[in-house]
Image 1 (tube, one colour):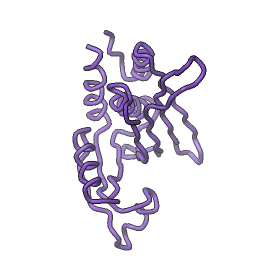
Image 2 (cartoon, helix red, strand yellow):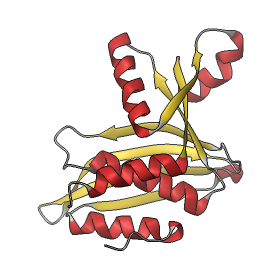
Image 3 (cartoon, one colour):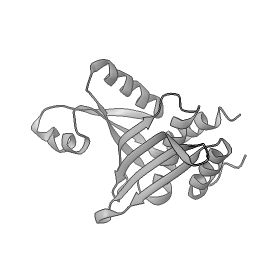
Image 4 (cartoon, helix red, strand yellow):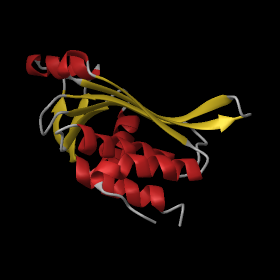
Length: 173
């Protein structure tokens, strides 16, 4: 299977998703010189409706470290590989459409057990903890951006893409 060049990766992923009965769609806006992103993976149901299986929301600014990821969801019972597809498509978009080469996110600390699960999950994706965002005054801007406290994590876009592609393409093999 053709793996595609970085500028063709999104198109390739869209085709691969379609082969598995999934639709991959991106909604990108450019308010105030920023990119806002909503990426969804849906599955056609009954020929007329779409069932949302996964999504990623985020935004980016024009810098190497500008990709900021806010929401990542995969529905319970989603087809195998949907999470990997969401991650791969998000990273492919960043490489294709922005100067961003690092992504940041916050593993929210609502409940300690859930927080540990999130940190482990993001580490498996290729993210590392940069620092803890707590209640200090200097943490206020980050708390306002992400809506809470937790572990601020960062990852190389290319590395996250490669891991996600392996996971996405593994079930298809």
